[in-house]
Amino acid sequence: MAEKIPPELQTQIVKLQQLQAQLDRLAYEKSVIDNELREVNKVLEELSTLSADTAIYKIVGNVLVKKDKSTIEKELNDRKEILELRSRTYQKQETLLRNQFEELQKKVNELVQRYYPQSGQSSVPPKA
Amino acid sequence: MSENQGKMVISLEDLLSQADLLKKQIDELQKAQAELADSLASISSAKDSIEELGKQQEMLVSSDKKGYLMFRIQQQPQSKVLVYLGLAYYAEVELPTAIKILESRENELNQALQDINSKLSESINAYSQIAEILKSIQQQSNQKGE
Image (cartoon, rainbow over all chains, first blue to last red; front, top):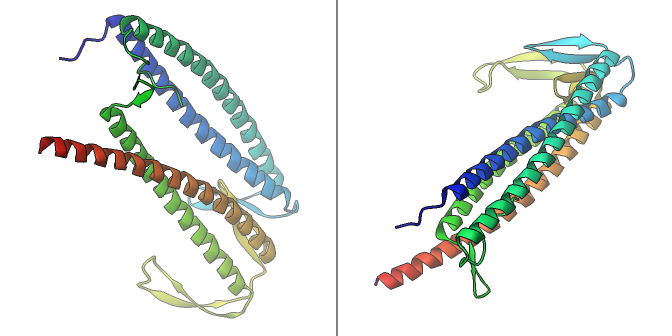
């Protein structure tokens, strides 16, 4: 029969898995933000090559609405600011969580060594 | 995973979960690859259409996706078109500018497709290696069973 994992170790492993899930979710959310930011920059770059009197249209539902180039640029620059702020926030959160993850990983490895001194290496895989 | 006399020991469960993870990754990458290829085909088609817009000619337009109904339109030579910039924006530009914008988007998508292709070949390679290991394990267990 399989040996029962000590409760202390079990608790820490669960915490580690939760942190891993949080990190994965955060990485996904950050990638969504970064993709949109890349697209905003791409549109701004294209707009910068067009003359001021170029007719720009925005999709609103199923219709195209004519807008001023300057209005669109302002709209996009505002969006860009918000996205950059959110991206930086996610970056800080990710760094914080990664540090917590690494500390907890060390703790789990120490517990594994304490409870299973005969096993050569820990069974906790390093975070990619 | 443990180390015995300098050898790395990996459990069968680890191998199987790694293979499962790679399979999911391969599926996602193939889906993204198909979407990018579809977008590139659309851009190519748009560029071809621009070539025709400068000419005055009779055209047939389909009323639906499958082409159950077609009708004739008299095409006036066009000097401007609405081209997609990204997000939710279109710009009304001269034909050469439209081609430039489309080519810029095409280059970007080609680069993304290259990245996906290289990631895909890495994943397929890793998956094949694991499949080989699993195959040899199965063969060994079959031999022991005999």
